[in-house]
Structures are given as structure tokens and as C-alpha cells.
Image (cartoon, rainbow over all chains, first blue to last red; front, side, top):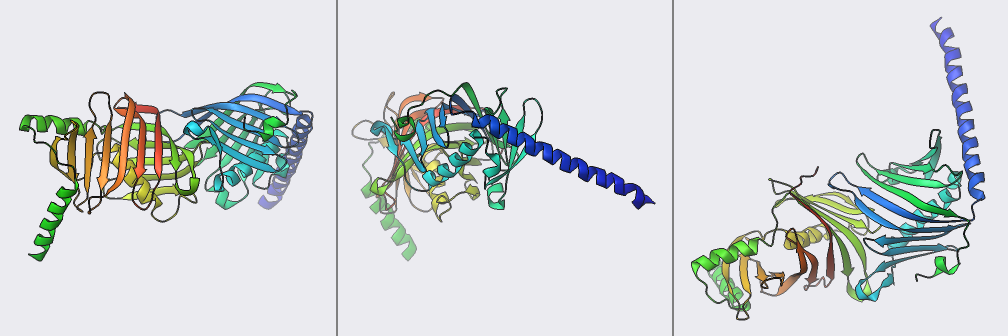
Amino acid sequence: MRFGRSVPFVFGMVAAFIAGGGAWANELVRIRRAAEGIRSIKAEFVQQKKLKILVKPLVSTGEFLFARPGSIRWEYKNPIQSLVLVHKGDVRRFSRRGSDGLVEDSGGSVEAMGVAMSEIGLWMGGRFDESKAFAPLFVPGTPNRVELRPRDKSMARFVTKIVVTFSSVPGVIEALDIMEGECDSTHIEFRDVKLNLEIQEKMFRDAK
Amino acid sequence: MKGLFIGAVLFFASCGGLPKLGLVSAQEQKLFEKDCLAVFQVGPWQVVHSIEANMAHGRGGVFLGLTVAHEGDGSSRSVLMSVEGMVLFDASFSEKKIVVHRALPPFDKKGFGEGLIADVRLVFFPPVGKIFAVGKLKTGERVCRWRRSSGETVEVLLKGSGGGWEIRAFDLGMAVVREVRASGVIRKGFATRTQLLAKDGANYSLELELLSVESGVGSER
């Protein structure tokens, strides 16, 4: 008897889950379509790094440029100048070294930033489902969000969750929250966002 | 007896390798010691630096360094981050032990953590051991010298009003293995510019620029 009563309940839950999953998938498709209408993004960003041991968050500011399909210029201006350029599959990273100005880096840091930037490129293009590193989950609300959870356990040791928050403009990301364990996180907020400006190709190719 | 003899030879050989210090009165000695120790701030405090590392063959990079001194028990923490804020290395340390919380490649190499913490200790924390010499160099700078229980010497050299300070670590043969030069404006006891030169086989230099300092505020561990 008890079993008989629980079957419809379980069935109902599964149906609701599938229906919900379908709705989420539709929302992701909607975000992707909206993002496909965006050719370029120019924005300022403010990054706040919070660590359990830090009395005050570390604040960095900079400028972000994006052009479809996957060109990125991610430049920190304060407190330390550094730059990552992604263009036509090439990833270059530069750091300010004293009087030498911006110097191109080599080695593991470039590779790591390449991976991170390719993910950001996917998110900016609304292509969350193409991420090999993170599984997306649409979270309805005001504002809408997409939660990204690492697919790989080794990645989950360092990044537990990424929350992408959208602005009121369809397909445009307002903030990223990267959760690293229980207490440490990075919050990146995009400000003064300008869409579909003509951005010269050299901005993604040259450090200057 | 033989050990004592070797010890005595080492002591005199060591003293011979260091620049001679002019004698000062007992009162001056106390004052110099106090000023030498004032180079190192008492916790709790936390400082954030940009760190430019220059290594052999043009290698190196720019990082963010966070150093936290807790109150009371002498425990501290050091975190090395990428400019983008990724934690690359994170360790707690006290006089007796180092506990590594995170070390991403290549910062997980054997000896890296010990080396980094040794450098952090040299720059920010009073030398371990006893002061065995205090005095003035011919050029007028005040100097305090510590001897570690392992026999190595560390000296603090005060460069006069507004001139910053230098810290030097010597090996048993009295060769300088690390040199710290603190200069620029002093904010809450911390120099805005600090250079660390590794002069042993490691041969690297670190240029530290003070980005923020919080003192007298305890933080979570």
C-alpha cells in the first residue's frame, strides 16, 4: 500500500525534474541565442579576491575586450599591470617588469591562462554547454544565473563552483563569482559595458 | 674537547669575515638593539606586495604576495598568488614547522616551500638566535648581529634617518647568502620597496613593492 502511494509521487518528482531540466536547457539555448547577437564587448572590471585570512579583499581593476568568436584582451591595470591576449588560437601573457615595461611571459602561467580565457570566451559567447571543464546549471531568478561545477575531481580541489550572473541585457554577463573552497572566492564585476563597438584586431594581437 | 676547539676556530674565523664594528657605550648598545628590532613589526599584521622575481636566463614573473603575522603564538602565513588572484602557494609557519596548505606546480617542487618561508622570515621577522655584536661601522651605520643555533649569522644594518635598512644572512664560512635592502617610504613600519638578492647557488632576486598593510587587526587562520 505504501509502495502504491509512493510510485505516483516518485514519478511526479522525476517528471518535474525532467520538465525542469528541459526548461533549464531551453534557458541556456535562449542565453546562447542572445549572446550570438553580440559581436563585441568592451567593459571595465573590478575584481575582489577574498581569502579567509585577508582582513580586506584584494581589489584589482582593469579592462576587458571580447570579439566573436573568441578574441579576448584581459588587462589588469591596478595594482599590477598584466595582460592576456587570446586571438586566433594564440594565447600571450605579459607582466610589467620594472623599467622594462610589459614583458611577455612564457611557461605554465601562459598555458593556465589560456585554459581560463578559453572558458571565459565560451561563457561570453553563451556557449556554456561546450565547456569541457564545467557542467552548467541554469538558476532562474532575478537576475538569472548559470552555475558551473567542475566535471573533473582534480579541478574541484581548487574551484568548487563558478556563478555567472547576467545583466538585464539578454546574453550579457554582469559578474563572475569563482568559489575556491568554503571561504575563498573571486568576484569579478563588469562595469560600463559597451556592446558591438568596432574593436581593432590589433587590440587582441599587440600588447600596446 | 675537539668539538670545542673546532667551535672556537669557527667563531674566530667567522668574526674575521665580518666588517669590524666600532665599540659603543652600553647605553648606545641598548638603543641600537631596540632600533634594529624595530625593523620587524610585532603581529598582528598583514601585508600585500607585488613581487617581481628575476631568475637565471631571463626567467621569472610577477606575483602577489600576502604575509600574515598572527598575534601571540608566533604563527604566520604566507600566500603566493598569480596577478589574476589564483593561489599558487599557501603555507602556515612557526619557528618549528611549516604546514603547506596548497602548492601548485611548479611551486610544489621539493625545497621551494622551505626556501620561500626562509626568505619571508628573513625579510619580515626578527632573526632567531642571540644578538652577539652591536656597534657602528666605519661609515657610521649601526649594526646588530645575531647568531643562530646552527652557527649562521644574520645582521641588520640601519642606514640612518630615512635611509631604510639592510639585512644580510651569512653562511658558516661568512659568505653572504641573502641580502635584503629595504628603502622608500616607511608605512606602518614596512618599507614600500624591498629587494632580496639570493647570492648562493640559487642566484635570483625579488623586488617587492608594498601594496597594502594592515596592522593591529587580527585575521582568521
